[in-house]
Length: 408
Ligand code: GLY
Image 1: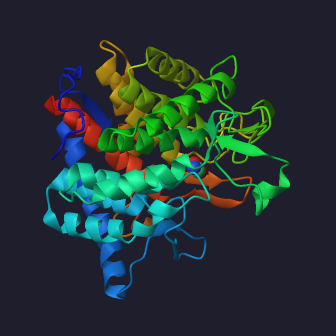
Image 2: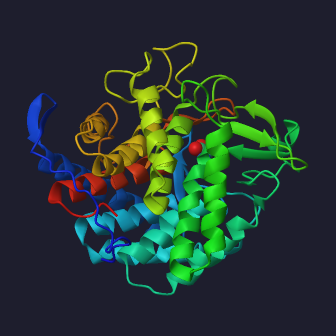
């Protein structure tokens, strides 16, 4: 396996073997990884067998209320997560079967590298081709990564020094009065730009990512370090026009997955820049999340920290899985911190029958209880492919830390 940071000396947390209770039985941390891998392999074997037997290339995103799977087209923002999960299963098992499937479903996304009409090309190509480049052996994936990053960079708006997330000429986004909407999720697309600079030597892509991270740091966060979902910028003078939400409960509420994108996004920015402000900021977001009065004891948040009917509100397992990934990485950067223990607790919770589905149920997705967008009335308390993807990523990070290996 190639390691992106083979030349960088990562601080590796020394982890004593921890024990926790699952179904009231003490289980070692080795066992929790093995048990989750076994479960994930069983679910994704069922999932991929159905698709392979169809003779089509299908990309499962979620389970619909009528019990059917929603298969998405390649320009959907979630199209990279299914191939990405197969790359992670290959990494976790070493089984060549997953490599072959990962390559097949990754390469179906080839034309996404030219996608310029939304910002999610970072999620799509990052989860698929970038993981494939790092975990597989196809040199040609590099060109797809660099081309995709250049497509993403076309959305850079120099007046505001941000990447525009959504277009505003059609759909529900055209009805909000926005000019240049930027969502906190966009922090997760920056990895593609950083990697493309590393692979191509084109430093303009790195600079676009840094500008975006700095502008977001200046405008997206409140005094308590929670973040808004959408900041709308003026394309004329770069000023902030609106501070809104689209997927959260209210403009002034704290949408759970948004806080997760923030903590992981700034951790990733620190990884590529070494700029301490970004890591400091990730720690501030940690303090917001984990001191919040509405965070349940099992650390799986409600879909919005300010949802009106807590505790009778859906949880969002996807937000928890993304946060666990950030915390594992932060734990390698900040010795003697609580981050690994917190991430372990999240993984422990997600591994219980409260969140992890029985094999053969849940549309053959791993995790139950995620939320796409309650204001849009879709994907409420369902499995979603990115919850599975980040859960598998968290398992890989946990395993690498516990083996004393570099986390990336
Ligand atoms: N990036 C869209 C979402 O988190 O739902």
